[in-house]
Length: 173
Image (cartoon, rainbow, N blue to C red; front, side, top):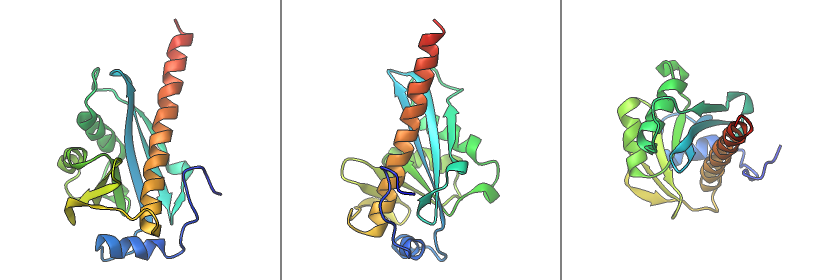
């Protein structure tokens, strides 16, 4: 089913991603992580999974950040990816981090063997081992559409959880 954050996905997306990223196998499962907060309070994170280019909602996860009481997106990302993956067997074919080089580097320290890239919003720039200086995505290609839709889905999923936590807190006062 189409959502506000997805587009018509090309049926060859698995191999399109494989070729674009230089992987040896098709990319069927992709997880994307994002962090949300309001002035360092109600720190939360999200992980959404797309399988074959479509949201796989039973694999979505919300995270309340447990180890921080102030904004630190790098440490928050490290915490949630550690909590999400208990072993290498849990890794999807690709992990996308919402952010730039710094966010990617923070997660690489935690998951050094994981297939990782990060996607910076401003210019839709993708960073990863194969793109150390970044590559600007073509938003008209199936790969560009999918990665941007994935990042936007993760972003909105994190914000919705953040708003829910703030609302619950205000009701408890």
